[in-house]
Length: 175
Image 1 (cartoon, rainbow, N blue to C red):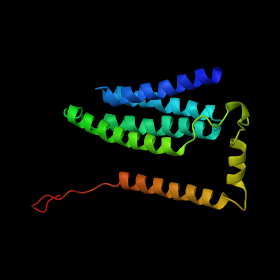
Image 2: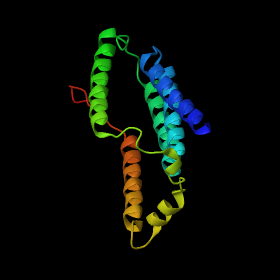
Image 3: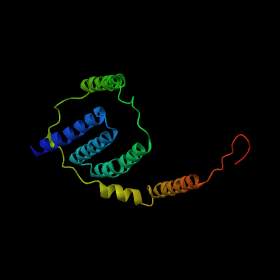
Image 4: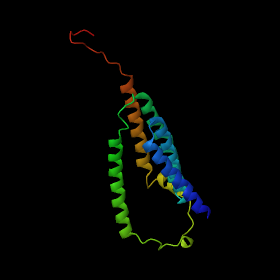
C-alpha cells in the first residue's frame, strides 16, 4: 500500500508540475515547476530501485541543467508572443498524437497484468557496482579519464575565448 501511495505521489508531482510548466505564463515559474517534475522522476527512479539514476537525475538535471536554464532566462529578453494559443495547441496536438501512437503500440505489445508484484525480486543497490566498473583498470578507467581531460580542455578553451578582447574596426578603418 505504501508503494502505491508513493507512486501516486511521485507520478502526480511529475505530471502536475509538467502541466504547470507547460501552461503557466511566467517563464520563471515554469522553470521552477520543471524542478518539481525532475524531482518527481527521481522519486520514480528510487521506487524502481535505480538509486544511481535517481541521484544522477537530482545532481545533473535538477541541479546543473536547471541552473543553466535559469541563467539563460535571466540573460535573455522576454518574448511577448511566446504564449500564443495557436503555438500551444499545435504543440499539444503533436505531443498528444505521439502519445496516442505510443500507447496504441504498447497496448498491442505489452501483456498487462501478467507480472505479479509479489514475485519480483527486491531492488538491489547499483552505485557500488557502477563505481567499481568505472574504475577497474581493464574496463572503463581510460575512457573515463580521457573524458575528464577533454572536458578540461573544453573549459580552458571556453575561458580563453571568453577572455579574449576584440578590437572593432569601423568602415573608415579606425579602431
